[in-house]
Length: 281
Image (tube, rainbow, N blue to C red; front, side, top):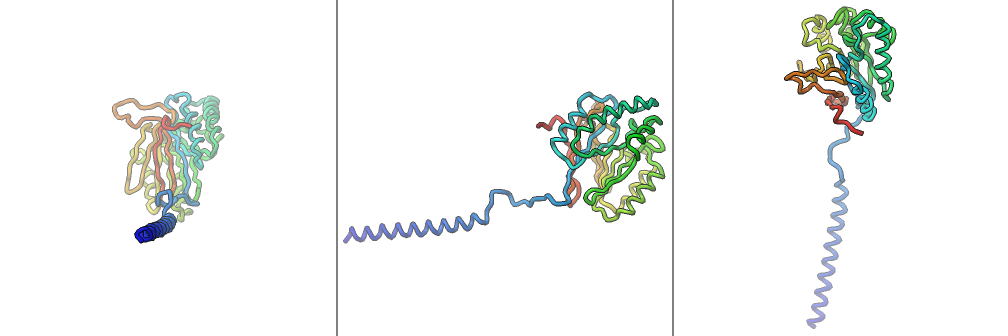
């Protein structure tokens, strides 16, 4: 009898164990359905998300190979398109043939980009009469706009009627552009000189007033040192160099070769500075 009883007990324990294991297995399976091997953050890419790169100044004594390296590395990152903040050639000459040669040189590099590039007039590119003539010959308009995925890009020329200024004609042009495109979700402003810092930019305050009913971000160059400001809730960026002369003084911790990488999201642009020596294939 004890033997039979022990056998029955062992069988009962085994059956109970099997039942419990089955329950645990079923629970684990059901629980696994609710779990997944990734975090709970939503994938943010949408039809309106896009990315573009911004290249800084390459003048004041261009250092050989830096601009080409930037282009090579931008090609690895594959933005939708590339912007710049001007000062692509040395300029400051009344020799049109020399100006053309300088553009041919920089264009031979820009032509290696796999995506569209947008020119912007800097003081080196547009100050002399010869450089103005060749600019119009090669690029046409010196200020313009375009729209990409509901974002309005305004590209200013801060060299007319003279250095560090925008003209009344230019101001009226952009006033018309803004009035015609009231439904855009964001405005990106590109201007070579950071006119918000300069007293000579008489028309700038009027230009900013035209933007008051828009979400906008401003990008400039010229000072060869990366800077970011927030003015009345809007972000203003000044790029450092992309092959241009770097500034060597005690306040140069942000004078380096880089690109700005901009991701346009439904909530606005996300901007980061990427040093060229931080990108590898």
